[in-house]
Amino acid sequence: MSPPRPRLASLDALRGLAVLAMIHQHVSIWLWRGPDPGMTRFDYPGLVALNVVVVIGAPLFFALSGVGTAMLVRNPDRPGLDGKLVRRGAVLLGFGLLVNLATPSWFSWGSFFALHLMGLSIALAPIWRRLGDRQLLLAVAAILVATPFAQAWLELPDELTNPEMRDVDQPGGVLRLVLAGSQYSMLPWSATFLAGLWAGRRIDRGDARSLFWAGAALVAFGALGHLAVVLTGAAEPDVLWRAFRLKVGWFPAPLSIVAPLLGGVMWILAAATVRERRRPLRADHMLVTIGRMSLSVFMIHAPLFRELSRPLGIWSALDPLATFAVVVGFTAACLWLSRRWAAVDYRFGAEWWLRRLADGPRRA
Image (cartoon, rainbow, N blue to C red):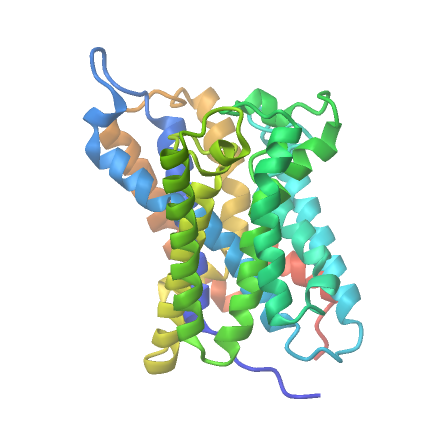
């Protein structure tokens, strides 16, 4: 068995950036009281611009989960590897259920969000890891192409509301939410995990060029698809319209949003690959340390800011400056904690429990 290779600090730093981006977007939406009378959201260009920039946080987070899985399966003959992958996925699904139960204003027990997507994708990794690189790319393409057909089959509306994305009593129940009807359903978002799995193999070879061209192809796919909508005059309920329309809302996500975002993720991963080769980050860099506790941070942010904010009276109550101050303060606290928690290997955090429950106690 080959010796384990060192962690790539640049990827840990990206995990930190991704989770902070997701948290900023959520917290700024939850705590901000909204536009003043006579104004719209676009009268607050700072908040709008920042929220647009950070939307890449979710697909980056999912792709990095795929990259991490690729690093985990470098040695395909490792004893018990498939069982370890299934256990890791099951633990993440359990974590997702805990977040569901701790955030009843947002989720039901059957909601399918970020942790559920990564958990199920990792649990299926015994299948994914046996696919060649071309087969993985074909799987990504198949998922993207299947998405608008599944959305049409389920008759999803142009905009999914939170009550709809948590409703397990609709036809299909939980399976509807898992497939395409919840926030981060398998269609289309598992494509980001599989693209990350493919990218992880390329990163392992130091191949940034392939990541760049994959990103360019995804951006072009999204742009050309939307151009086809414009030129053909496709409209609801056409599948082409459903796939490539442009809209402000995030759910259900059309390919005109998902594909360019995933393309951007590929470019970010390519830049991280080059950075890691030329000038690796130190293991105690704050972005690296917060990246290594990103799962813990992600799990606490929804109960903390969506549930606890209500009895505290700050839910949808703060002006832009106060909202920004809360986001900055929480970020600073996480960065400070990450440096100190690293000294004890993030003991009792979500990452620590994930390793312990999936891999068993470490032997001296």
